[in-house]
Amino acid sequence: MSELHDQVPTREKVLVIGAGPAGLAAAAALKALQVPFDLVDRSAHVGGIWDEDREDSPTWRSMDMVSSRRFTQYEDMIQPVSFPDYLRPEQMGKYLRAYAARYDLTEHFRPRVEVRSARPFSEGVWQVEFSTGEIQVYAAVISAHGISERPHRPAWAADVDPAIRVIHSKEWTGADGLEGKRVLVVGSGQSAADIAVDAARRALEVRWSVRTGHWIVPRHIGGMPGDVAASREPAVLGKLNDRIAETVLGRVAGDPSSVGLPKPAVSPLDDAVIISDEVLDRIREGRITPIAPVTGVRADGTVVYADESDYRPDLIVLATGYETGANHLPEDVIPRTAHGELDLFLGAFPRGRDDLVVLGQNRVSGGVLPILVEQADIAAYLMKAVRDSSPALTQFHRARAGSDSAVPVTTREQGGLLGRIGEKLGTAPLNRRAAESAPPATRNPAGSAEGRLVPFVDRDRLLGRLRTVRSLFD
Image (tube, rainbow, N blue to C red):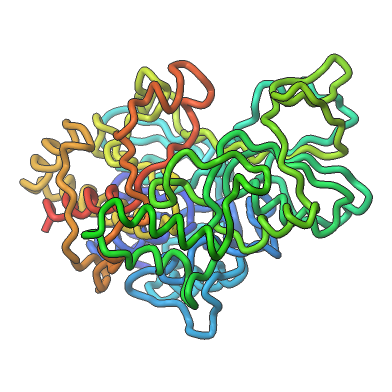
């Protein structure tokens, strides 16, 4: 660490928890605004879940990312042209380490340091206990711990026969050792599809229990990454885009319902699509068998499906998502809505605090990094405004007091911190569904465990609103 940095007491610093993509974006933004900070992570290196040496990472070595380079890179440092369109985990980790080195973020980084608890005593006073035994006071906390800290397990999983191995998708490390084994993958999203494909390489049998139908999008369409192709669809075509997208996907991939998967309820442009070149082929070949949703477990531990059939696998993989929140934060520090969702303005900012930001508590179709960068920029501006008693703070408070839907969507390009070159996502959203377009009660019943799952949001609409709020500090 630099000598000047060490001279700043922690009570005047911001603590950034997590050195993954979001934490590095926050650190870079704070440094650009000359706001003192510390950056900690339980891992030995920066990179978050993309650190290949991290034992609790939900990634695995043969995994391909589901968003292309264009949507998984910082605006101020493009990825090497030698990298493929879709990176492997070790390549993403190398890129993130290079980003940290470029901006000397490692000067502020404390590796192998976990935050056991972070508790506010008053505005601008946080007592933080580290795994080292240290207890320090910080002025603010930016929690960039990601979404994989709290795996969600359905209630029926506790009743499975102990002789059947049950893991969450976070614990998946690959298909080695599955020869001769029967595998049941439970879940409707990207992780379930990826794990089913990976398991089918070795396992005797793979069954995929799917509750909700989604469109399957190939990684490349017309020679370019699928997410890039989708971003170039002209918005003026309106609903015609729906028919075009369905026609294109029907020709290049096929109708998911034709192979036994549930029929998607919405168009591809409104759906939380699954990116895969292989899953439909593996189903057609019989390597993966779609089955009905799991409804419970018999007295002998056998899994039961909605069509009243049953199955006794050797391994169950729960690709059932993650719950919001952070283990190091008190449960009441961020109020929840009546439906169990965290009450975060634009997915990151608790409505009653200026000294806490929680990054990355959203799921999107395609790369989430543009969202994390905008949230991190606003977080840094907010911390700077608090230190300087800036008039912009009042404007931010006024916006934060209202609903997300009241914030106008800015579509014009804007520059960001550290020379960011402006987001170029195209004119049509990859996913047009706004988070507020459906009442929370229809998404997650009040008081249910599903109400605490990390929510799926419209990336481009949220991105536009974040740009609007960021402009308040310009």
